Image 1: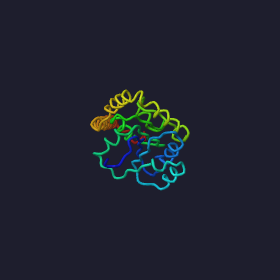
Image 2: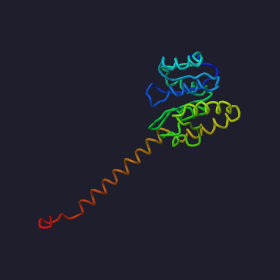
Image 3: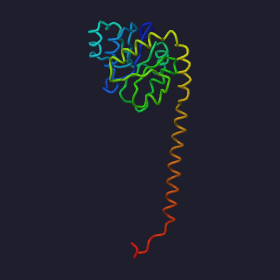
Image 4: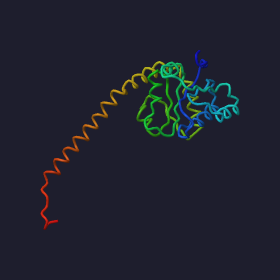
Length: 199
């Protein structure tokens, strides 16, 4: 109610940077037969509105800006589906956040995302509008048959990731590198210097 969200909606998170690929997502959603609204956690973009208007879906396109962190779990969990069509991500936290909230996830089949999401997402070719549209239709059609199973599996997968685990593994890397540097120093100091006539 606070954000005036529709009862059924597909959610995506991104900004206007080209690699986030939001314009292609809007095009694919417009080309699909999906009746659920598309909610973008992003700044308002009149170009995206124009795309939706041409497809007579302007009234079903919603923008959310400046949402506080405490509201995100509700927005994720109320969505029928979360879509992340990015062309490149160093990690890609939003799909994991959506999975942690029990929401089915669609992500790109490139960059770090297959490694992060493993078998707990449906994959799209982010450069293929038709593929995205078809995948949206298929996943939305099958939601009633597997929503509980997908939600539980996604939540279990998301629990494998935590900032504490990331900190511990990063610390282990630092300690390993420092240990190797110390061993290298000891080895270098133990090698006798060459005499002048051997130089």
